[in-house]
Image 1 (cartoon, rainbow, N blue to C red):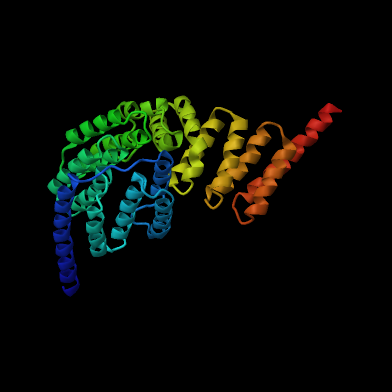
Image 2 (image 1 turned 135 degrees about the vertical axis):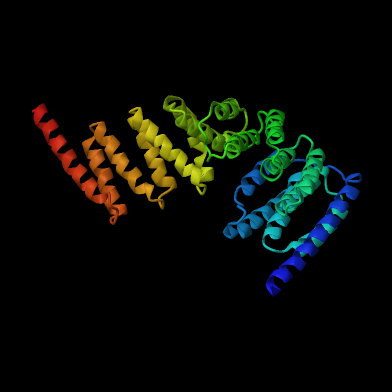
Length: 371
């Protein structure tokens, strides 16, 4: 009882402070000024933002440190302001709500740009919605979108609002209309892939199924990512999702080139589960279509990027297997031995030993035939 009452008081204080903060935003907007944007800083900011994962506390401090460095290197830019908002967001997650609100008030008095204010407002909208205040969240998301205009910040706010419509307010048609509008508005930009990815995922959510739901509608939503002119790394995840859908629709021949276009950028996402899955699916399809040289290269890359995952043992085994299929006996033997050397306790070691014997026999037969 005492613990619950204490949490209730804290919650009321924070909610009251949020209402005050929302009022400050509206008051400050008329006098706000824009700041210059730096394309290099924007790319760095997007990359840093991917380091942070809500709920994974080990990502909090390292992300804050990277954001602080960006602010120092690009002082006076819009991205420095956006980085500051990101820092406040993470500190809020760390439980520093009251301190964050105090700093936020001082930040507003410095006349930040409308885009940065919109970025901050989107996070307040997120917290309002998470507290069940969906109407308040909708209003704040819309104001954030208006403040940010055509900037990528507006797209992120739209994604948040679509989630509220779908999961909080039961307004699926409004959510899907917003996804479509946002995808078209930001066509050819780095955010388009994420918008379409979440749109396709929402279709599964609404149907009560786990993503990817095998549907032509999802394929149509994700297809434009193949022709996107944006940074390929930024749309790699969406392309992986498209390949998942194509596989679920029993269209492996179409899925293979999609995965091949996503795979070159997986270094950037090596800590994300989908990245390892992407490369695993690619190896599977290259095996299916007997693209042995490509499959060897992909398996080598898997071992390099994800050596601590259990599947790395199998990827190493596959390298030997694919070389064996090409009749490269000595190379195959070396790779099978490498498996035993690197992972001596792996259950695949016994299979590798058997394959080594088979390679030696095949090599001996080939030598006898030549004589």
